[in-house]
Length: 567
Ligand code: NOJ
Image 1 (cartoon, rainbow, N blue to C red):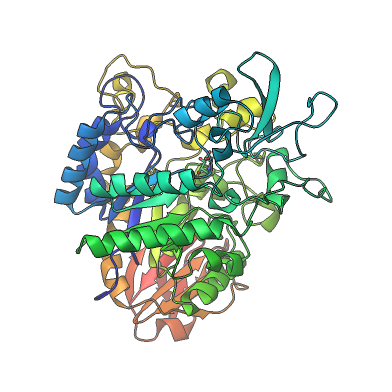
Image 2: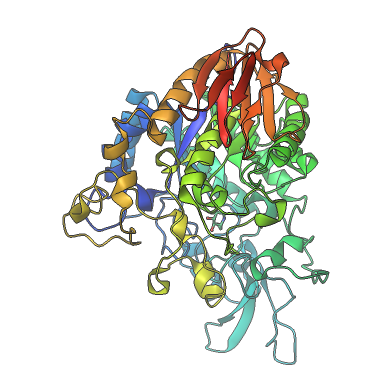
C-alpha cells in the first residue's frame, strides 16, 4: 500500500543458516550456500530474509551464544561473503534481517572471560549478573531461579586464584551468561553493533528473548508455582525477570538509534521485530509495539493454536483488536526454529483439542501423526496467515510441507535442551533438519556441495520426496501453493488492513472479509456451507486443494480441512 513502510505487510523468509544449504561441503549450512540459493527465495515472492544468528559462536545453542557481535562465524563464511550476500539480495529486491541476542552472550565472549579474570567487585563483572552464593561457603546459588532449558539459572565460577568463587546468572544455559542492561557499557556496545550492521546494509533485526532482558535489581527468590509445570516452563512464572519493565528502556533507546539512523541515511527504512511470547495477553504484546519501541512483535497466538476454528478465531480476533486498533502491525508466524513443524502438529490425532497443544515443543505429544492430514491442514493454514493483514514470517521448509523429524537418534541430538534435561525433553532438533533440494542422496538431497559430507543433523529416509526439485514443476505441490498465494497476496494487501470476522468459529469455519476479498478456513471434518454474506459478489480465487470449493445447487461448500480465498 502506498505510504506504508515496506515491512508493514511484508513476508519474511526465515533461514536457519546451519540447515539451509551447505556451500563448503562440511555438512552444515553456510552463507555461500545461502548465496547460491537466494534466487530460490526470491522465486517464492517474499520481501526479505531473516537469518538466525551467524556471528562467531561456540555453537552451544547454535549461534544464540554469540562470542563476537561484529563478525561472521568462520564456519559460515566471513564479512566479505556477507557483503556479497547483501549486494545480491539488493539486486533481487530482498531485504536482509539479522538476529540480535541482547539477553546473553557466549561464555567465550571476551567480556565474560575478562570478567572472570578481573575478579570480584570489578567493573568487568558489572556487565553481567555475578553474585556471591548463599550458605557458609557460598556453595548455594544466590536465588532459586530456574533456567529455560532445564536446571538452575546459576553457575559457579572458579576465581583466578583457583578458589570456588561467585555465581553468574544464565536464563538459558551455563554457556549463555545474562548481560546486565543497567550497565552503560552494555548499552553503548549494542548501539555500536546495530550501527555496524546497518552500515553493511542490513535492513533490520529480529530481537531474541526480549521478555527476560529486565531483572529485579535485587534478584529476589521467585515465588513457588502452584500445580505441575514442565521442567522447561518453570522460568516463565518468574515475575522478577519475565516482563520486568526496565527492559523497555532499552527498547525505547534502540528505537531512537534506528530512527536516528534513518534520519542520517535518507532512503533507509529499518525494522526491528521482537520475540516476545505473550500468548493470550495482547495487552502485554502491545507494550512491545508502542510507537517508541519495536516496529513489530511476533503474534504467537496462531502458532500456539491447535487445529480448531474457535481457537483460530480467538487467537486472531484478540490480537487484531488490540494491535490494529492501536495502529500497530500484526506479525504472524505458524512455524519457527523453536517449534514443532505445523504439518506434524496438525497431523496429530488430537490436533483439534485445545489441550493437545502444550504451547511449546519441549514437551512432546505422544499422539500418532497422520502426515497426509497434517499436510492438508498445513496448506489451509498457509492461506490463513497469508490472508491476514500484517506481516507474515515463514520458516524455511514450511513451503515444502516438511514434517517434524521425531525419531532423531539420541546420539545425534544437539539441542542443549536434550542434554540439560538429561533427555527428559527432546528439544528442537526435529525442525532443524537440513533442507532437501533434490533427490540425490549422495549430496544429502542437494543440501551439500560435497558428495561425501555427513549432515550435522541426519536427514530421514525419503527426505528427497519433499525436495524443491520434486515440487518445482508440480502444480499441486505445497511449493506451488505458496508461490500462488504469495503472488495473489500482493492484491490482497492493496485492500488494506481492515478485516471483519464472520462468525466465531463454532460452526468449524474461521472466516473474515478483507475489502473485496474473503478468507474461509474449514477446520471441521465435514464439508460446510459458506455463509451467503461471504459469497455475495465473490468468486473463487484460490483453494488450498483442487477440491476445496464446490457448488451444489445454490450452495457453496468448502471441503473439510481446507481453505479458500474468494474475491
Ligand atoms: C529464543 C531463540 O529463538 C532460541 O532458539 C534460543 O535458544 C533462545 N532464545 C536463547 O537465545
